[in-house]
Length: 222
Image (cartoon, rainbow, N blue to C red; front, top):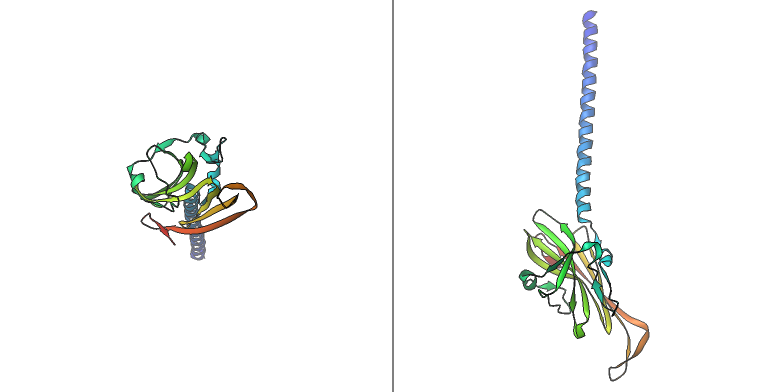
């Protein structure tokens, strides 16, 4: 009888130990899953995607002396930088109005994204000048691989020269980029080409283009 009692007690102890180990393994699995979720969440928060043209609005304002938009350089203490030779040598994609970058222009970094250990991208904003010294506001996405500028894409280009031009954009979580180009023509002209007034209802048009950021850091048009 004593031997029977000892075996029963041993069996109970074994069951308790087995149950404890199983619970420990389950807790560890849950912990690992939560850790993975936290890592993914942290990465998403770090990149803050999707990122859209609405996120850029606080960084520019309407110039009080004209209908042009200018960078609000005082917003959140933005620091100005100068374009270097690399910026001037890498072609600027979707540059419909032949914006010419120049070392005299200053730009400001708004956001930095990390797509991999070697690939990053930056959203920058700056003003250039068009006809009659009118100001043009530009928002641009620069792609870097191992800290070397690889590609440049013009996300927004907004100005008014008889016709109002502007763009809206979205950088998605899947490395996609959507750009919508808007034009609004609200002026009336006579046969000689002179402005004689405004239209009751402006003519507007928009064109959408799509890009993808590939594994080499290039902006590829779809």
